[in-house]
Length: 131
Length: 350
Image 1 (cartoon, chains in turn yellow, brown):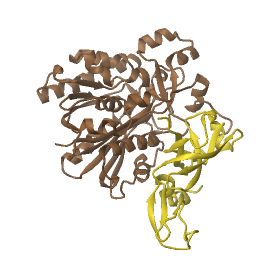
Image 2 (cartoon, chains in turn purple, green; image 1 turned 135 degrees about the horizontal axis):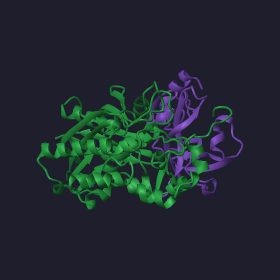
Image 3 (tube, helix red, strand yellow; image 1 turned 180 degrees about the horizontal axis):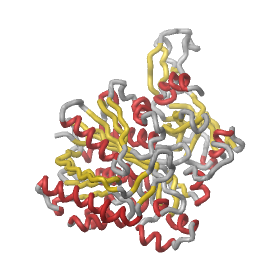
Image 4 (tube, chains in turn cyan, purple; image 1 turned 30 degrees about the vertical axis):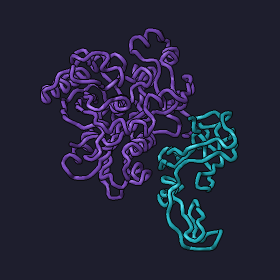
């Protein structure tokens, strides 16, 4: 990912900034130009609270080169408390610990680097809530 | 009076036992554990660094402070493992937490005392009335060369402190710094691991500066060792802070609460700040807390804190550091540790 694109996506990648349709209330992540529920263009910014549950997951054993060191790792679809779904890694756990509807919270982590000299890209991953 | 309005500490969940490192290099595990008074140390995850540790610690500090991130006027991260040589760690942190863009940001370096430098400057801004709140962080993913004595202790973690004048949980009553040019430990540009001067890191470096700052702040404040409920020093290993305490006239019971090194290792810039967080997790209103950091090169910053009646109200608003250290510990063998710390040379960079 080039640094201009990375920088433009900071509100969503760093702060989980979403959009709430002022007409129908639907929350979109990432933001859209037009609400897919009511076609309104009128939105307000909202922050996702960073808590959700695991809807489904898979374990990556044969990883792309830049994620080689992390294999095997978990990629999950997480439904946030606000209703939006996002795809992310679930870290600091063994794949066997994952369960349907397992509660997770989002943590700020390194996502990837395009080589040693390129920028470090940060964003959110999920960890299992253990309380 | 200005002081800490919110604090938070964080360590990664990965661990390696000192005995596993000793076995790798043909050492005597028992002798290493006895010599360093260290059971295990924290290891950063493959996706963790000084920035991610700082963000998590500051999230906890914000939970305890109960303030809007936008009210923070300065954010300083002290570390000797900033991920970039040129690009601030602090800019990632402020954008991740919704601080700024009207904010002063700087990265600090001074070996293991960069964290207390950040705290000192943040507190000074608030005390001087320059801004309502300022953030000082000490965090590191410290490096120790394979087979070097530092490898047993160099660990990962950090703590964040939001300074302010309203709703203070621990007032800062006094500060004092003691600094000289002492070449005990260093790392030059492009060098991956630090060099150190062996036993010279003890008496002329750690003990001289800790004692200088400690005696200086006691004299300046007119207080005696027995006035303090808790004491925390920089913790390069288990023995040094216990001996420093004895030299200054403190009892072991005053040191134990903030003495995390036996289960955490040396988190460098995060060492004494994380110990302070452990003390703030349990301190009661009126308790006096004595803190002296140490950074090679060399210098020490000393602080005297006094807990206020607000401290018990915020202690449970975020996880305590001893609870974090005790939960979800994931042990690595030396091979996994070498991978996690990227000590292995690959055919192509990954």
